[in-house]
Picture 1 (tube, rainbow, N blue to C red):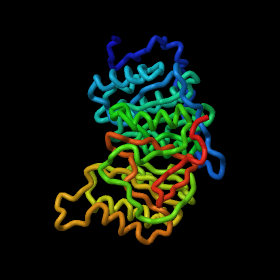
Picture 2: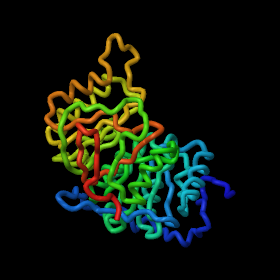
Picture 3: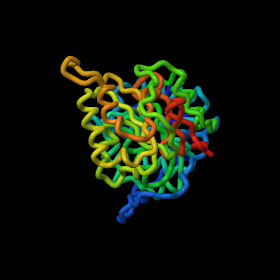
Picture 4: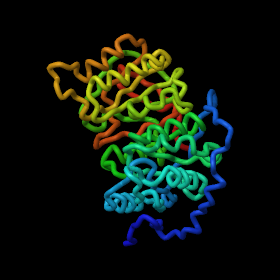
Length: 348
């Protein structure tokens, strides 16, 4: 087996020359400000097919366990893809997978490479937001491809969708569990163009519950709650008008969830939405429950004034079975039937 190191690409039978990597200078973002894409049809990437070339890179936290990277590459090959591993997948720069310039350079180059059909990321942690202002969104518009990740990747997925209209995929990372519905959900969306997002397929920490009755339609936005909130006030925070917001979280106490949801409320987000879907909130209970609201009490307090459908306990988040949600895809939420259905495929 090819040995991984910090300086070399692991090439799955593909020469470095064949990957069409270009000088980074050609991809620096233009000096003009980017504007969000509004009121246009979503930009839909091509579906993945057996034999397609996919890439793995690090865009946030450093992946310290090389074994995880090796196993992820082998796994992607086993399910039928050729795999290109970028240098950032095994770089270390403090808690980041390389410097900001190294990470954005590799991302821009992989996006520009016509052979690469999808980009997967090693892990979350922190770091995606540090490079948003260096991303060349024009290149993304001209080379739409599948981007998959979650947690800290919420920043990247949201920014790319807001600035280009490209549908991105809130789904597993390289260090995630790729078992059961985590795999079937992702492949169903990006390979088979399925439209039914089945939240009943796997048991979760919080079960499905209707918090507010009704149904709504609109494009999907959201991801990790704390990361999504961190984009408030930036050019990358999405227009929330008539959108369906989906949220998940991990390792936050109820008061912290309260603070973040209240920030969205005060920013006027909830008054604009067509619906809300809460996923799994793992390890979000109070250390002192006798003097705290419960997680569900906090959520219900902040949702009880809404006149839109609100669903609790959908099967996505920092859990073993993490269903993939396509950011920017048009969907219908029926809180009474506890279903979320895409109104069109998220790949071509």
